[in-house]
Image (cartoon, rainbow, N blue to C red; front, side, top):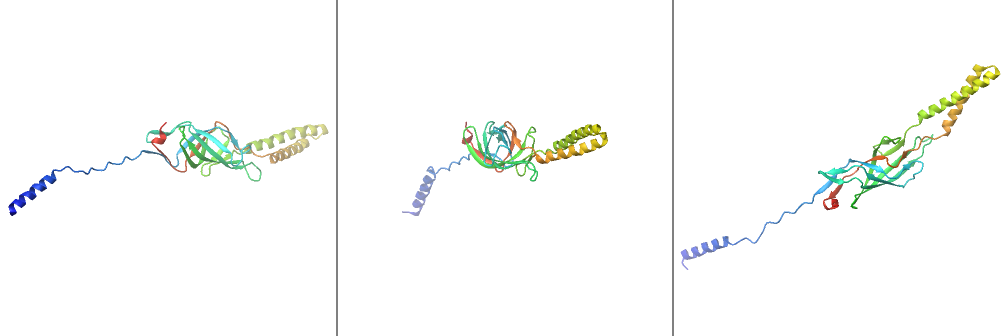
Length: 229
C-alpha cells in the first residue's frame, strides 16, 4: 500500500473514532443528609410532672418532666414543647445539725420527642424558678434547701420574750419584779435554743409544676427523617 494512501486511511479512522459518543457518564453527586444539632451547654426549660423532696424521695427514684419551650436548630423546631424527659434522683441528704442543710441531686437521662425518637444523655440541673425555696449549684447540679437561720433567731427571741413575761409576773408576785424579768428571759432563751437544736432545717422540695432548667452535657443530633411528624 503506498505510504500516502495509508496515511489518509489512518487520519480518517482517527476522525471517526473522535465522533463516537462517550459511554462513560460523570458520577452523580451524593446528597448529604441534613443534620440538626443542639449544642452542648444548651439550656432547656422543663416542667416537673411529679414532686421530689429530701423528705419523700430516695436514691434511684425516677423524675418525670416535659419541655416547656421549643428548641430550634437551623431555624427549625428540633425539640418541640411537650417532649418528655426522664431523670433520676442520684443522692438525697436530709437536713441535720451536724451535716448541714438538705441536699438533692438530680440527673437527667433521656429525651423523647412526641414522635417517639429518643436520645440518652447525662445532663444536670442548671436552675429552678423563683417559687421554689431552694438554691442550685450549677456546677454540680445540686439542689439545696434555703437556710432557716432567720426562723431560728426568731424562735429564740420569741421564747425569751415569753420567758421574760412569765418571769416578770412571778417576780412581781414575790416582790422582786426586776429579778423575775431577768430570770424569766434567761430561762426562756435557753428553752428556745434547746428547741432550735432539737429541730432540723427545712427539706429541699421541688413541687409538681416547678420549672427546672436542664443543661446539656453533650450535643444532640437529629436527622431530617427523625424530625418527621
